[in-house]
Length: 387
Ligand SMILES: Cc1cc2nc3c(=O)[nH]c(=O)nc-3n(C[C@H](O)[C@H](O)[C@H](O)COP(=O)(O)OP(=O)(O)OC[C@H]3O[C@@H](n4cnc5c(N)ncnc54)[C@H](O)[C@@H]3O)c2cc1C
Image (cartoon, rainbow, N blue to C red; front, top):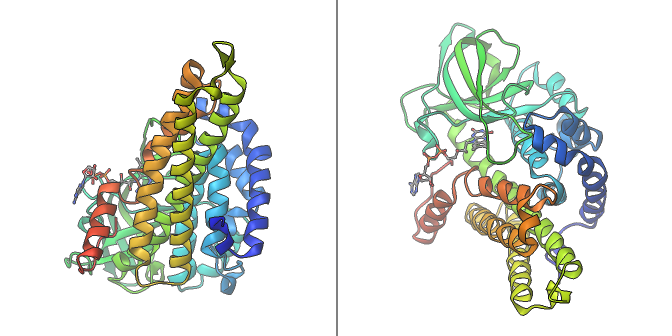
């Protein structure tokens, strides 16, 4: 039984459509934009054209209430071809979901209308120089001043930073560790926001990863997303879904690498026969298939758990994220090995997929943090970790 048998039928149609968009729309761009190493508007245009920028908006705001499985299949198909594109989508979905679920105020409907129409890009600004895995130590402050909030501080590693139209920003509104955090919507054109350095990265090279500074940035009181002090709780819940997204990106990387390795093993001849006839290569391919299949099962399991709000959804998402990203790293490394010298060149996509696999073990909560979440659940204590 395929793991996808647990997904609704319309999601399987979406998977086919996503494969075509990824192959025909993104495929021809990949080599150039990855080499260029700059944020790619062309990639965003493909995502917009496919209608994927609006997927995070609920039906109540004019969206479609996409099932978690719909995000999974889009992420997998996109990541088989170009994981950078998936990494642009993930924080955009996160930010639009946060607004869609928790925000109130006259600005919400016009913003989400633009999201649904693919006219704007969002970002999540949570990480800071001194608040990475320990997100509860965020020190960017938001202080109430009459009918406004004043935000001061800095953020680091923000995907889509400098190119997003709106940011969901995690701030400290009082001294309570987790209960003192609140989320705000900050439009990119507010005075007081400054984009700093864009990171030079090993992978995800056509996405922007930026420093952001807030200097007496003012937003109206209704830009607080949800209740004051609920930011950590909201982020933790959304990050559970985010981990299923990273598992799906990882799954796509593994599947893509497996397919490239099989094709090459059939074609490439040494010692007078295809290298796929050597047992050393066969065992490598078989192990890659085993890891990919297991990653798919765990990712589908986590998607179903999150969609149905299962009590152990957090642990199942952490298991899927950890296993699938470790599998992506291992399968992509072996794909480079199967291709030999050409695998190490940019003539084949496996070297890019290997570079893009590494970050999946790091963001959305490192795999060490995932293991602490799993262990805490096993030992009967709530995890309490947002990252
Ligand atoms: C390309 C990229 C894109 C990103 N996009 C975003 C984004 O859009 N928005 C955003 O807010 N953030 C983003 N991030 C930040 C990302 O989520 C963090 O880098 C990640 O959570 C790890 O934090 P850190 O880098 O500060 O590492 P640290 O927390 O400093 O960790 C360093 C090492 O210590 C380990 N460690 C830490 N604590 C523990 C512990 N308790 N037990 C065991 N080991 C531990 C970690 O696993 C890691 O190996 C992005 C990062 C990158 C590189």
